[in-house]
Length: 91
Image 1 (spheres, rainbow, N blue to C red):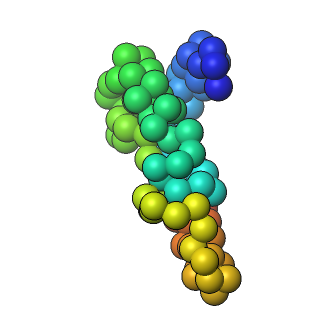
Image 2: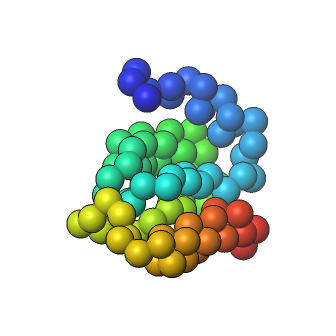
C-alpha cells in the first residue's frame, strides 16, 4: 500500500469510466486500511473523472466496532454474510 499506486489506479479509472468503485474488506471499517485508501482513491476519482455517475469510492465491510471480533459465531457469520451480499450486489 505504500507507496500508494496512484498511477495504476488512475489507469483503471480511465479504462472503466462507468464502473462503480468499491472497497471491500473483512476488517471493521475503523480497523482495516479503509481510512488510508478512501481519501487517496477519492482524490483520484475527483481529479481524473469528476463527471462519473458515482464520484466517490464506496465501502463494503463490517461496520465500525471497538472489538476485533463479534464474540459469537452466529453473529460473526451474519456479519460476513451481510458484507459479502453488499460487496457482490449489483445495485
